[in-house]
Image (cartoon, rainbow, N blue to C red):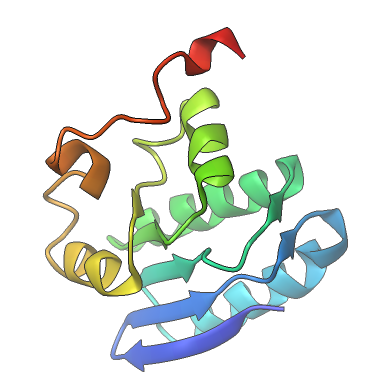
Length: 135
């Protein structure tokens, strides 16, 4: 289940569950619909406790991103573990679903309209991503 951690006007920070998969999809979809209905335009998804993300979860996030962008909003991830970051990189989603090291950084970036790159690009740190195409 999605847990709303913080709300400030049209900005919502919500914590994703440990597993974002087919079994969680309907609950997550309903929660996002509720948030969108309440005027959410900027969404920070805290993925710090998410251990598993399947194709259903990725599809949900892409759908949410599209809907938020239709409202001139944005969706970003915060705190994904190395496995999730690597998976997003392999799938080519790091530009589409930007990820930041912390919720505070993600909030700051989404508040500025995502005008800057995620932390790994800011620092030039690409450790963990080298050789990922070999997987």
